[in-house]
Image (cartoon, rainbow, N blue to C red; front, side, top):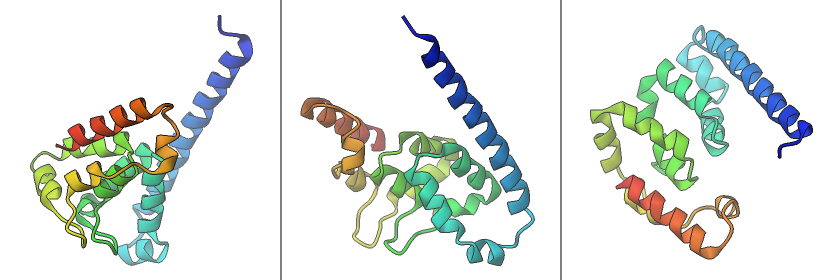
Length: 152
């Protein structure tokens, strides 16, 4: 039986999420008025990588709508945004790749500076913070196998 405090906690989390989405909408109204130079000055790439790391799919989705060419941008290691989503095991963000159609296969064939493609990155062990979310070695291994299958 769910107690009333649990329902209140769920309600509060939904309210916070709704307010965060409203804030995101306001932020992107302002971002649309900025030039590319101003975006670089505010280090939009770092902000985007932080959003990927924390699994903030709404922000990543909005930035793709705002600047679709950002999907091809590489960091200092030669990794794209989707490569980071794979390394950090952010499945919701990685799932955005399916909306790309033909561009998906172009991205999947790209390599970073270490000659790793999506399959290589998916085959690497998850970060410890992601492994800690799943209890037991067998379940962790199953989760890692699922990641590899998704990247194929």
